[in-house]
Image (cartoon, rainbow, N blue to C red; front, side):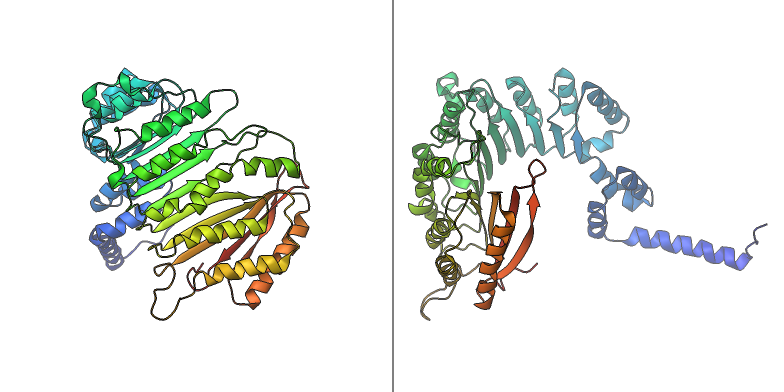
Length: 456
């Protein structure tokens, strides 16, 4: 039989519970929001919301902040729930339609959600975009797999979104751009975005090279005014087809697009053309494929095309596919040299070495990497140092095409040890990762970080 508590012990326990409840109620809202942000389980969030009244709102805000709609039954369930608990309608900030083509029932759902600011959806049809105009406060749209029709239909949809500030869009099919399909008034008062993400795809089985040309023409058209753009994420995916010319690598149109961008752009992410649709593995085919990209790389890295962005603060470029390591370093140096007076505070540069790269000429490679170090040294005392605001420099060298992985790792370790002796760079070696389909093929990833500017 359990021991009975005395009256004084029961009173003490009661006081403890009241004190705990008072303490819970007194926690500042900022702290509760921080705690809630680290809770991953919906079950735990529901338990958290029942502790006391002041904990309920932060937990429910997290629980209902995002709706993922996967089927019509889910839409029906949410409509019923919002009718029975109308206060949670105001907590929904994001909707994901990636797995479900929204129909008339979805329109009823959207009417009940006044505070949605972000939508993620595939491009099911023009109507699936137009119906989003019901979301009066929509600021960010992620529109994926635009693979058919004319971009005029997309334009008619997004033009109705008066508060749209961020657009992510991917084109991967037979898409055209016919401005003549638009009413004249549609091109008046262009769309001004703060953030733009564009993914461009090419495929040998479809006219996606033509689609990419149409896409770039659309981005350069009066539909957009890029004068307020702060962040650009530009991705080329599978645009190099072995044995053919690079598909969708449009230097002239790319130049037109960059010329239209805001010179005060602050954040730039470029994922550069690569792709490999053939199983052939010859040195000659690698060299031939990359040589076809020379005009593209020359435009980006040699012509100072990016030097117009005088307010650039974050730059990420990956992967720069390089056949010879030395050439890769030289390109990196030439490119960074064009930006050395910019206010950049973070640089991510990723070099992907091609097959059978010759790394035996250590003096040459060391000389180039030492030059990379010197790029950041101060000039004469009366001049400003290069990259005066730089806080983080992330320089990655890796390869996915080595059959003698151990040899490449030993060689790179030797180079890095020599660099450490010269106090050039802080060095971190990552172990090779092996492809499960072929134990002979490994991946080496070495991370070189500017000492003192980046701390793990």
